[in-house]
Image 1 (cartoon, rainbow, N blue to C red):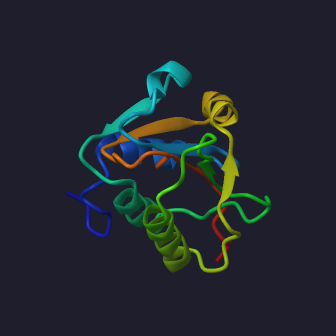
Image 2: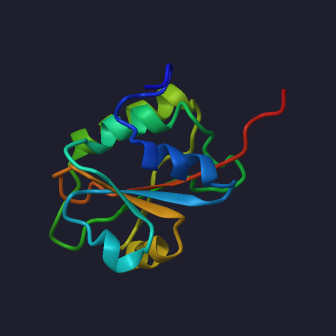
Image 3: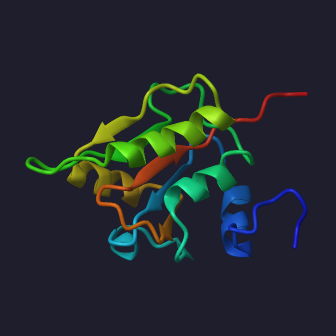
Length: 144
């Protein structure tokens, strides 16, 4: 057990977070997402909601401040809608840990899949909300 690190983060996930460099992307995927289909580096976080993972991960590293969209979600397909409460819960943790982060950007489903292929890793969560997937782009820690 490590002090100051959420017990929601497994040793495998902590290792992935530590190995990521600036500009690398991490996909936090809902329980329905075909993570293993699109990326060879998958870690499990079964039973853990993505909002809780955001609260555990975001204190450990910075979001990329040099890109327009450091946070991206999957856009719903025509006829579907996003769960507004889910998006608000994600945004609340993002703002809490990284105030002033640009608004969440949205990618169409198949573009999101393409982006997942080039991500550093995918975290398969226990999130059951439709379109709960989110991509975080890692930044650099301030000097000092």
